[in-house]
Amino acid sequence: MTGAVKDLLNRFESLTASEQYEAASQLLRRVIEGEAGEIPEDALVAAAEHLFLDLDAPESGDDQF
Image (tube, rainbow, N blue to C red; front, side):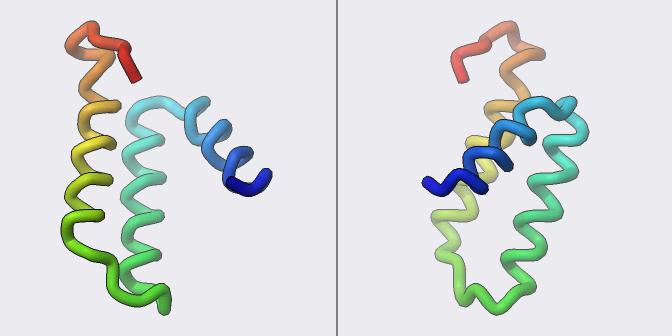
C-alpha cells in the first residue's frame, strides 16, 4: 500500500460516520463512472458489506473493526 493510500485511509478514519458514508459513496461512484474498467459485482458487494458493518458497529456496541 502506498503512502498516499495510507494517508487517505487515516484521514478517512478521522471522519464522522456520516462523512465516511458520504466519502465512500463518492469514491465508489467515481470508480464506477471512471475509466477504471469493470468492477466485479462480488467486489462491490463485499465493499458495501464491510462499509455497513463498520458504520453499524458503534450503534451495536461492537467495535471489532
